[in-house]
Image 1 (cartoon, rainbow, N blue to C red):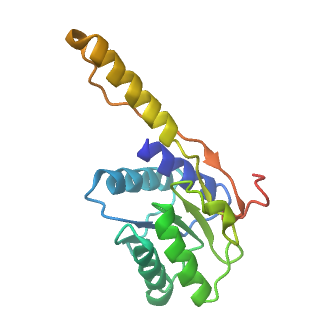
Image 2: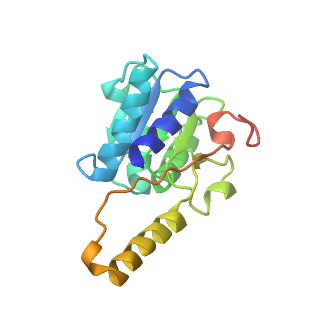
Length: 180
């Protein structure tokens, strides 16, 4: 559930009091980027925070996309973001690299949250707040539907399922050692 996941991550940092929240994503013409942007904007809107065009960066879904977008945020805008929501954890690696080069500390000067709870996230110098990994849930749900369709082909199930993920709270958002 890309919309709800992005909403939850954005809401989490809004509840920390941040109002200048940037969003870094891959292509927003793709479903993933589009839905995550939608969730980010929905949370800002519901909390009465204006979405700033200069704070929305669209790049490639890789380390260089996160790096270049973060550099742009801090080099080219008059107002600096207090928090950044990254649409995936690979981009977050690039953002962290850029922030380190700019001597900006996480979470003291900028908070970070990210989609994807990839295995390396907890090993970062400041572990990232993310959504829980739900690949197993997605695979299990898909397998169950496939199995039902195989054993009962005349009643094929075709439906869209949204699997919700919970927050994995870590220090990058300003929470200390996993405490909200």
